[in-house]
Length: 284
Image (cartoon, rainbow, N blue to C red; front, side):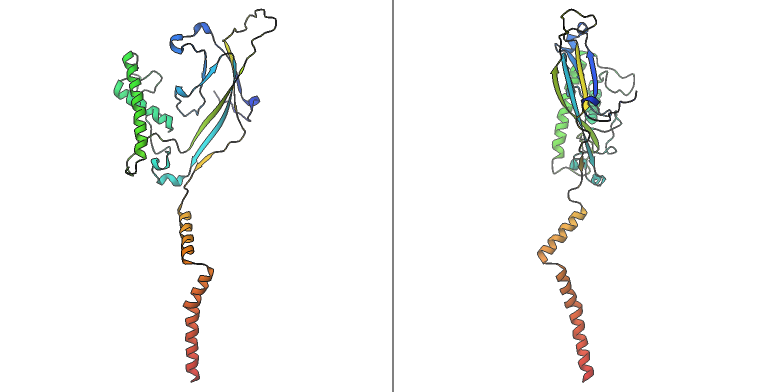
């Protein structure tokens, strides 16, 4: 399946979808009393947690305006440690279950490894090492996964605090899941409007869904252009050399006139004195 290319921004150039929901098949034990759909907007290479989904209510027209944000980092910052530049390049940290490094992929990779080590099982939608690996199915397994999730979040918080300490060694590998140095994320704004449910004469129409069974979604880009963010060194070698030269000229009074004075007193004046003495000796 090829992706649908978007050539321009605006609602007319976006993706419009009309969704129908069969309320008779709603699972209250799984979804609760809320009716609707969930939408995920993210990069295809990024793992998305279910806590970041957008809830789409029924009997509404939902408009989602998407704005991409790009992050780029100069290669000159590779000499710094990841905790110093607060990001990681793709080839700096390899993940076990993901090909591309992102902060969410790193967090989920750590969660899967800890769950496999402590619970001896993984969830059915998680990556597995082999087909023979056990899938969590009992109440004890799910309770263990919940405990591991809280432990992993606590470990990440402590890792961020450890990275901020000045006593941290340069060669020590960071345990934090820093954002990717070169990444694309999508921010969204959601707007809702009511759908008209009056079909005119009030008589029943076969094939027309009833109340709380239909919703409409339109997803489009907010603008044709977007601004990216660029990480670079604020004080590089050239800036440092220029700053040192400026300070020296400020405190020493060094300028073009100083160069002329230096040439005069070191070269011209001694040469004039020597030539003058030689001239007097010849005339005697």
